Amino acid sequence: MKRKLPEVDPDLLSRMSVLEAQMHTLKKKQKTDEKTSIEDLEEKMFNFDPNKVTLMSKDGRAMTYTKQPRLRDKDDESRMQRLVIMVAQLVRDNVKITNDNIRKLGFGTRIVNKWAKGVIEE
Image 1 (spheres, rainbow, N blue to C red):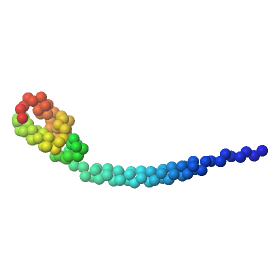
Image 2: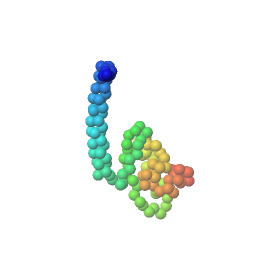
Image 3: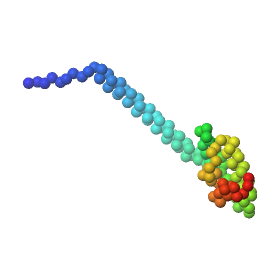
Image 4: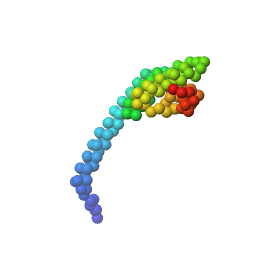
């Protein structure tokens, strides 16, 4: 006795072919995205400058700043002046003022903490 296989709904076959076509296009798009992301990563690696710091503004823009050089100042006043100037620039560029952001710019922990506590006046 032979059994007859059930026939497949033609609508189901068309849906499967559409899904298969979409899957192929997604795979192609993923491959091109991977290539561009690898190229972007390589570009960032080769264009890396250790004296530059990139911070995100509140608007979502990337702002690049030059790190402060390591200077051995005799007093904290000159360091504080540089810190106050940099904070004013961050405010103008709409970047969030945090201890971490200021530390990334090359200022030491001691001077940043004094500025945050207000020991040395602006």
